[in-house]
Amino acid sequence: MLPYDVYSEACPTRLVLDRLADKWTVLVLDLLAQEPRRFNALRREIEGVSQKVLSQTLKRLERDGLIARRAFPTVPVTVEYSITPLGRTLSETVAALAHWAETHIEKVVEAQRAYDAQTSRATT
Image 1 (spheres, one colour):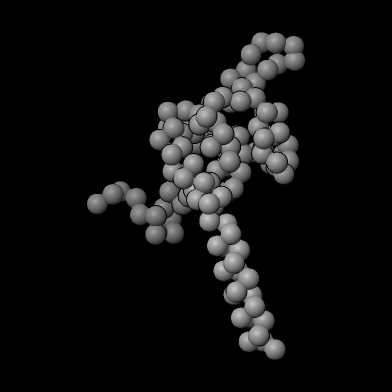
Image 2 (cartoon, rainbow, N blue to C red; image 1 turned 90 degrees about the vertical axis):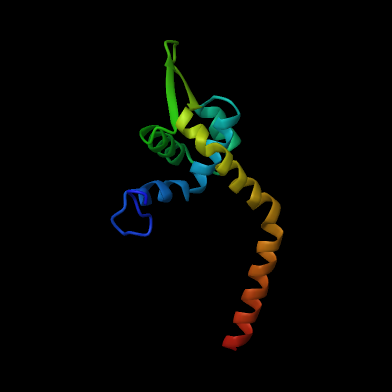
């Protein structure tokens, strides 16, 4: 038996699951699995993410050991982010999740419409 149980309320693995359930985490990891990127490149490629949220996401991923931050002594300082070996062990799963969403979004939206229509009829 594993020493951790994700179904236990006190299990620390829930923190990791919470992090991975975040859409920004999925998108950042998927891009960094392709190649290292600078902050502004990530911000341009991930439409809709604010500077603050991207910064927070990168710091959390760095703290978790999933990405690495490398500063270059330029003026101004150039910072590049890359996926770590630990992050690489997760990248295939993250990519599959992101691409599943792209592939199946039409069916999800269709199911939502059908559910909403049924719920609307039931309440009237």
